[in-house]
Length: 200
Image 1 (cartoon, helix red, strand yellow):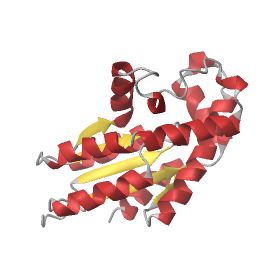
Image 2: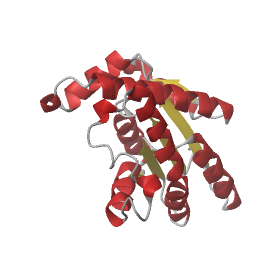
Image 3: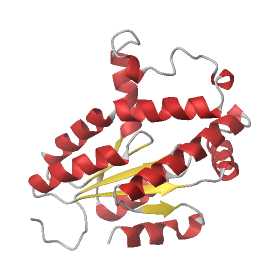
Image 4: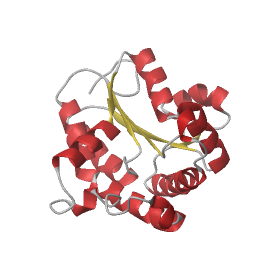
């Protein structure tokens, strides 16, 4: 077992779209000297290498070019179904990082508490310290404002922000059921301190 003063060798940061995961990951990676894996890139690669016919669970949104027609409840259902379909892929990323003696952060929308719990079991078997934290922002207005700053050319995205807030609530409930820490993103100026406290 590692005995240095850092609390983790691999850190999973989950949370809905637009809550600030990438910013938090960049801050923690710089402080720890860690390699960062954006799980969204893995998801995009898997979707490019598969088709709706061969892997329908990875392409729930492909059959619905206009999400506005589905409504927030159905979009949330599809988001959760896609996340669960990617649990094995998340575990594969963690397994790969367990073979490398370099600290790593894996962050993404599709990391689920269920996958994180499985990953922690495998990390313990390899004598590595894996920690998980889920960032939570339940206010669609704040998420929408984050989208507007990040994607100014896309205009208002109220439905996307609402689905993200709903998904954030679902992740927070699931994380607490798996005894994983949940950190509220707001207020943003104290997030780095509160995040560090949750991981020690």
